[in-house]
Structures are given as structure tokens and as C-alpha cells.
Amino acid sequence: MPDRKTALITGASFGIGLELARIFAREGHNLVLVARSADKLRQLASELEKAYGARSLILAVDLTDPGASAYVLDQTTRASIVVDILVNNAGFGQYGLFVENDLEECLRQIQLNVTALTHLTRLYLPEMIERKSGRILNVASTAAFQPGPLMAVYFGTKAYVLHFSEALANEVSGTGVTVTCLCPGATATEFHKRANATGMRLLRMGSMDAKTVAEDGYRALMAGKPVVISGVRNWLVAQSVRFSPRRLVTAIARKTQESKSQ
Ligand SMILES: NC(=O)c1ccc[n+]([C@@H]2O[C@H](COP(=O)([O-])OP(=O)(O)OC[C@H]3O[C@@H](n4cnc5c(N)ncnc54)[C@H](OP(=O)(O)O)[C@@H]3O)[C@@H](O)[C@H]2O)c1
Figure 1: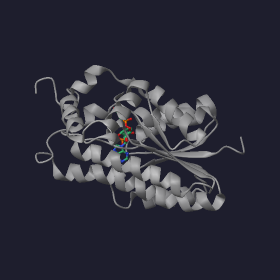
Figure 2: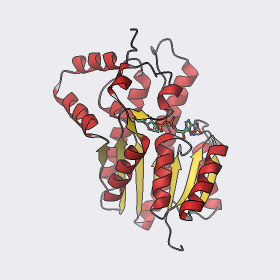
Figure 3: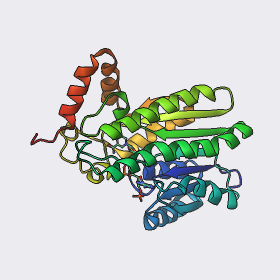
Figure 4: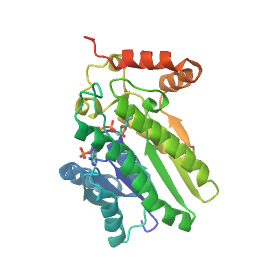
């Protein structure tokens, strides 16, 4: 298919990013798949080629490395790939009291969730504006709407992603480029296991599945919406926070973050 567009997806090896890759391939896109797990990306690329004829460039990189975003741009340029859609999805959380958490891990979280997302956006946006065409999907979280004791840095990074994306959507309005921020609530992926947060009360209230969240993100991106909160219950919770005293909101957030034993 000669006029296939290309979507670059970070964090495509698991969870929401993997489901987004499947959707983009199903909808006729080629892919640039970015994450650390090369085997998983190769497996996915082969699945998407067989199912949809999608071609994938695999970039197995750790996006917490300061040079990683420039490396990604260099590789797509060398391969003469025009990135029509940039999906900044890779992210991770770290559970526990800020003062007790490992500092290096904490800084890596900011590097991935904030710095790499900002860096990749800044690298690919100018050529999108020049072409008068492009779409950017940044994955934040419902964590973006309130402070999150016991995941203080993670919630802070997601507030950044939401506000950065909304501001950028405004700045690029009329250029042919759109910016969309996807805010999932609790979703069944590797995320909570990796964050050591599987005991949180929040998870007993139920999780969405990654495919549904990815479909919501894809639809909003294609419609050019600035923000989408996946799931009606998540939408209601995010709205309710706006009219409640912040100290109360923070105290409730702490309760939902605590584990059953706390
Ligand atoms: N699950 C939830 O409840 C939830 C809720 C709201 C928002 N989110 C957000 O949704 C996004 C996707 O998370 P998920 O739930 O799908 O989690 P996941 O299953 O843990 O997937 C995270 C993805 O990010 C990649 N990644 C992690 N560290 C990386 C690094 N240093 N360099 C490059 N890639 C890296 C992982 O690949 P490798 O390990 O192969 O590198 C993986 O593909 C994240 O931004 C997360 O904050 C998740």
C-alpha cells in the first residue's frame, strides 16, 4: 500500500502501547516500534505484518538514556521514514513514600514520563508543522487531575503531560497538527506490577482493559480532540475533583493509593 502513513509508538512492547500498535496496523499504518524489549517488538512486528501487511521499524532503546530521543530521530531519518503520528506512551510509576524511594529510579521516571516525551515531541513537531499535517498522542493518566501521595512523582509527571499537551494543542491550532492527551484510569497491564503497586485499594475498584483504552485514545486522536478520559467512571472522578477542596482530594487520593494493610 503506497500511501500508508507511519505511526511511531513508544512503549509498544506491552500494555496500552501494544494495543495501540495493533489498532494503527489494523487501520492501515506502518509503524516505528520503540521500547527496550527487542524480542517483544520483533514478535509484534511479525504479527502485524502477517495480519495487516504493516511494515515496522524496530528501535530497541532505553528512553531514559539522555541521547535516546535524538537516536530515535536519527534512525527514522536514516530509514527515510516520515513520522505522521507520534505516540508518546512509554511510562512507569514508582510506589512508596518519596523520601524512602530510590532516587535514581525516581529521576528515571521523570526522564521517561516527562523529558523523553517532551524531547520527542520537540524533535518531530517542526517537520509536522512544515508538512501542515501530523498528530501527536501523549499518554497521561487520571493521575494528572490530583496529587497522589505514595506515587507523588508519578502523579506529578502525569500532571505535566496533561498540561503540556493541552497548551501545545492550543499553540499548534490551525497548523494542520493536532495534539491529544489520553488519560486512562487503572488499566490491566504490567504497570502496577512494575511499580510495586499491586496492593493498592484503587485496584479493587476494577480496571479497564488495555484494548478499550487504546481504542478510546485512537478515536480521540483521529478526531483531533485535545483530551480524552477513558471510561465513564474515570471521567466522573476526574470532574468531581474540580469542585472539591484540594486537601480533601489529596487525602482521598492517599486512601485509594494505600494497600489493604495500611
Ligand atoms: N496501567 C495503568 O493503570 C495506567 C493508568 C494510567 C496511565 N497509564 C500510562 O499508560 C502508559 C502505558 O503504560 P501501560 O499501562 O501499558 O504499562 P506497561 O504494560 O508497563 O507498558 C509500559 C511500556 O513502556 C515501555 N517502557 C518502560 N520503560 C521504558 C524505557 N526506559 N524506555 C523505553 N520504553 C520503556 C515498556 O517497554 P519495555 O519494558 O520493553 O521497555 C512498555 O512497552 C504509561 O505512560 C502509563 O503511565 C497506565
